[in-house]
Length: 179
Image 1 (spheres, rainbow, N blue to C red):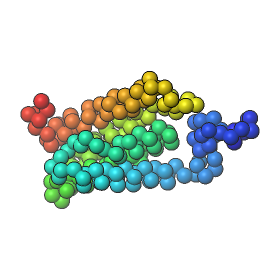
Image 2 (image 1 turned 60 degrees about the horizontal axis):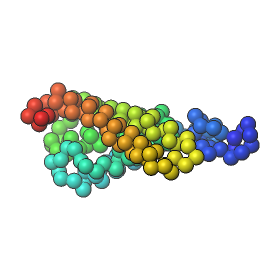
Image 3 (image 1 turned 135 degrees about the vertical axis):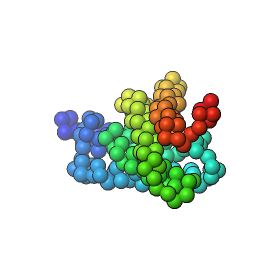
Image 4 (image 1 turned 90 degrees about the vertical axis):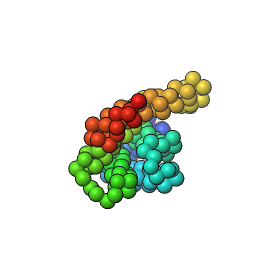
């Protein structure tokens, strides 16, 4: 319910939307961040299990869709949960590929890649949020196309722009692989 008009709120558990937050939603940001971290981790793990063992970049990454959706609907303040899930996934993937050695370089690389993933989702969510305020968000073809381009390829440039230089400068990617 929107307290000022007495009408039901379209976004009852979003404090930044008309209608404000319910008591349950206001008390559960940590739970939502944990759900996001676990969901990202499980979806990323499933994608890695379905791909080639030596593959670093994958064409299908459902965890990115979860990250974008969660931050677009719940708000960007849940990025730490996303970062934690991405960090754990990257660290586990690196350990599985390079043996069980947990080095400072591996931790730094996982943190850098997780930062790129979180920045990608935050930017993507900020770019697509304006469509969520519309009565029929994706009813027009132009809006659907803009939503897909802004939340997809454009936002994905952020993670690649952070991850690839990080891989190179931390010695996990050769110069010949950059071309």
